[in-house]
Amino acid sequence: MQTPLSLEQARRSVASFVKHYNTVRLHSAIGYLTPADKLAGQQEVIFQKRDQKLAAARELRRQRRADAMQTDGSAEPRKQPAAVKTKLKCPDRGTERPGRRFSRETEIAMPSSWSAQVSMGPDQDDA
Image (cartoon, rainbow, N blue to C red):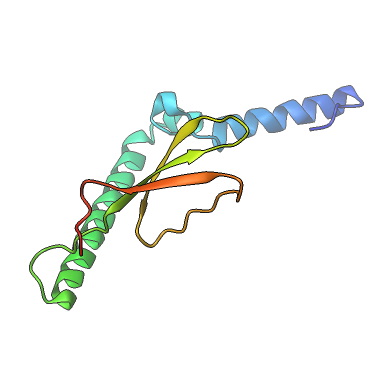
């Protein structure tokens, strides 16, 4: 935003901000609604639409999981890959920093000057 060069530019800039703030921006304190929707009494309609979308998304997720199990041929959900726990040593700091947990397929990118100690987590099977 530029500094207004006249009173009229300043008024337009403020009016634009107020319009956006009241009609576009969602406010967490009032349930992620715009003040204009809250003032117009639209919150119940908006909340019902949100609930319908969430229910549809949950049903779609449930159906996709059921289809995946049927495709697999097993009645049990697929086993997640075991995690790998890393400790990275940064040469600049000389301290160990706990790393994130990665799946087996994840490549860990780090500067070549860092040394890594990789240990398999307790949920790792020796297969």
